[in-house]
Image (cartoon, rainbow, N blue to C red; front, side, top):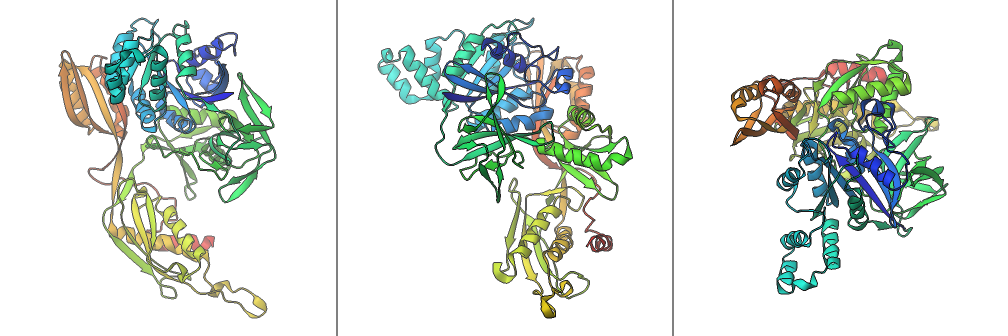
Length: 640
């Protein structure tokens, strides 16, 4: 038996969950179609998903197409839940990208297709809702070719000349062969060549239909079975798997969704996990619409494992990992979460910590002084989901502060500082010297040594490195510092001292704690000397509006500090693109209808960071404030 791990992706409301229902119904898994509006679909199982009619969590369901077992992963379409999509992409063999025959190519469609192409994931496109008023499949096909990829071919019905034209543009050798002897391109040869180009992420078949009526579904199923690359299930090779989803069972136990890329797993197996190991206590696999217990699982399958203390992104086994780099933008919004009942501050923090296991991009910042916990977000809908989840699953009612934008800091120059052991005002038994300088964009935090690795115990050097990375989460202005190089220039310590009978004397001996506590003071002094610049998140925008409203739209963009790059006018429609501060996108979306008689539309996507104009915004600190030496020492020494 072969397995295909298939993702269903789309812009919100394009109909991907309805398509999932139709595929399950056609496969005989369900006897009656569920409805998104009625909250009766198979994959939207959360109460909030059923209530709002949107997908929030990726869900897995299995069905058979011919001799292929399809593990279908239904992903969210709303951009607030793009993290769920990112994790699913790491385990896919292929994908179906769904578009609406009415709305056509939308903002999220572009983001998803760009990412799928970059990863080389084989893709079939399905233009849904051809039965709806306003549907224009021909226009949407032209949009796909113009805005997503020109390497498309319509598959309803399949016309050999169209397939040959596409293959000829992709492969000069095939073009030469066709011109020499066109008779060799039989239907089977064309199918084989198209299948190869689809598998290589070079060709994109486009299907048309309706998930509601079932039109075009048989053709799409044929494409899933015959054009997308399925894998033979085999236990060969070393164990290698990736955790792409974590949830909690009825008893609070962790359940890990794992895609196995090689090897096999059985109940009671001990699994290498980073520096440790875990023991699998139960395995479930997806089979014909159900989740069934199994004694083992082999490569190619997706399984739900119990007994492992893992996080999303963890690699199981000693084989090569298959985790992918971050694919989409980081969250750019932040809000403070407060319990309605003050006595629940502790349980709230624990609940939020558990939620980060299921969604690592919900970043937490806990301020012990103010007893406040902040979470990072993609949007307002995600805030509602967190609020409902805390109430339904943990019984904790919460409120949120006004959402603010998450900025970052970048190092402006070079700065250095050093504190010597035994020399005032250094109260710690450690010498630490650090130099900080800018790194290249996207390089992250680099820690380097100008001291000999053997000059002191490695645990002390590691304590400095860990403290550096922790401290840089809050720079001079309180924002995370990105892309810099920190070099350790000085080191020193007191060796272990003992009294008679081998009693350890901590007051005369350096410990890792001395280095952890001293490093923030040294690093922040170096950062202040180097200087940092606060950058705000920017979105790239494409805005279409009636040409006669260009004046009011331009004024609206200027008020929002947007920077238009190009303006094109085609007939009665004008199109602008440029950059806009992420903090202003919601405001523009709200004001755009009144400025354009309701006809304007704007697509936005994260486009990096830009220095803030004017006074640099700051954020309250949660790190005992190493910028204030007296305050920092009082808190740290009291804690020690």
